[in-house]
Length: 353
Image (cartoon, rainbow, N blue to C red; front, side):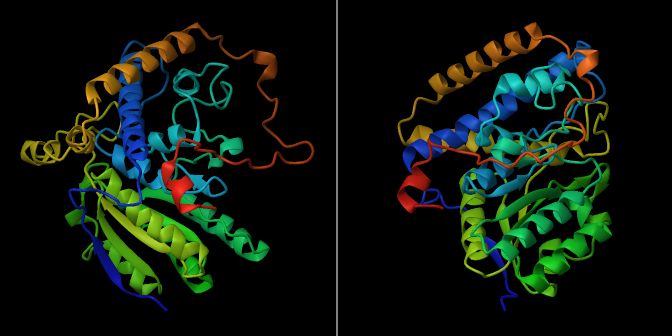
């Protein structure tokens, strides 16, 4: 039984399992995530997005790298700072912006706004606000895979504050006892709302994986290729019967907990230090060294977001008479579909299945 705690460091060359087009795609998805959330924040301040708004500025590498390492038949429990995972699974920017604005074309067709959404047809499980409840959901799905004898894996993300809750330990314990094919990605972004990590736990939470009998890995959460590689290894371990993995992706929440939070409790020096480690800029430098026209890619992404914004703003609000349609299952449940990523040279070369 594996009980070690590993530490993964990024190298300048990045992952050897990624093809050049994969590395470009990872940057594209991070740029899309950042651009969509910046546009959404602007729309929120204009009063076009109701409620509040949450973003993952500075954490783009964690969701992009982890989601890209998963296969189409795997299932992802995606949280509120993991927009790149939705994008990689095939949710379009227009649907996402429509979702934020409560439009009929949103993922939940206007029944919910904000970040509570998931497209079952793409293998994305909709989140609930109380964290880390989705750890239990991912563990349950992994149990189903095991009982059915399927070579599939479940993955979920959660924050450092989640490690102090009972459901974190329940999921970890059951996954360890049953050797389940599940990957837990801890987004250690330094703060649970306003509580810094040195006030949350006495030991690094990645060490808790060993207590439950499986592998814990710490990775640079601002290096998308390092996150990808750690997740690729964890998935291979899971589907080969090696049990779960806890990946601690060390990063920083560069904006407040939500749009209403001014982050005055975070020292300015800490923000400045992490700004120098920006995950998007890091991948841009890597691709520039390969001769990739990053500026052209940025222009393409901006144009895509502009078009998506226009489409979402022009879309209708949901009709009142459709409010309850599809809310409760009245027959055979809709099956989960396969999220496809046909652009992935990694999957073509490695034969991921």
